[in-house]
Length: 275
Image (cartoon, rainbow, N blue to C red; front, top):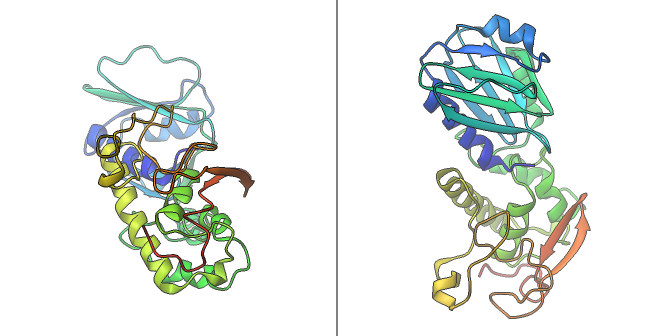
């Protein structure tokens, strides 16, 4: 499932290709056909993301709510648009570009009150200007649940996925199994600030990189990472490989229905300082 930076990047890309211009809106698959007919020929006026939810606003009072889920894909291209396949849930097209949405968990038209309800049930998003990290910490500091599980709970903090979870905990030397209530406010603030920087870089570069300059392949004289995920990371998908910092073995285990990755040496002490 895409992490939050990907959805914010999609919002930017939708605006870049379609904002302020009338678009042909269709649903070749048919599942969004009635709503597409209402939007056809209107202008995209805004696009925004909150966590893993994307909202497209047209010249109407309602919004297209999209959640990609595990299988959703968005692909952009230039004009002329090729004939769509019957798997395209939503296509926008104009005289210079097109964009196809396939396989989302959610693609539907919602009114403003329902959109607001979605925002209200999500935690703060490090990439949004209206984010309130203190609100997230209030929930974390009362919880016996592990910090690793809390970071994946979209009701606590929106947009953090498996990669950012593993990496931010490593970067701050925090044992993923520590209960949320044992995380100090200073630790939380440091992790939040780090997520803001890392996720903004993710939007800018359209990939996740989390290693500091001194730990990059060129600086350490090591080969670059080879993985479908791409990007240089400390622990994510590096199970049984040596830690870039201490040389110990990276571990993996299931937690919150996903594979967790961490270094038992670098992340062993409660209140450990960031690297």
